[in-house]
Length: 91
Image (cartoon, rainbow, N blue to C red; front, side, top):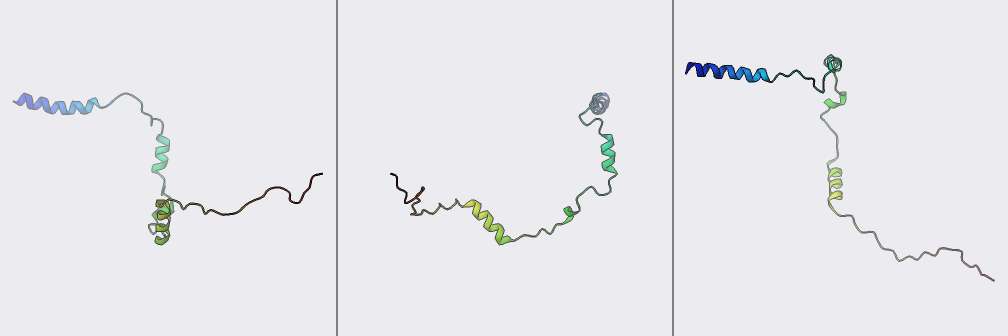
């Protein structure tokens, strides 16, 4: 029983040891950029702290309703358009 318990404890450590690989990742060589970002005082845009976003609720509702409803059909007109010179005679 003691041997079984001891081997199960060692097996847990071996699994963690086997997760270490001798390969390179896609992020290799980015240490200079990572160090620059760590030493940046405030990397965020100052406007990102503004939580009071102004807006007009009635206007927003109107915009949403405009997109939900199908567009109105174009009005029909009873207009005749003649293209060309008028009053010309050919001889």
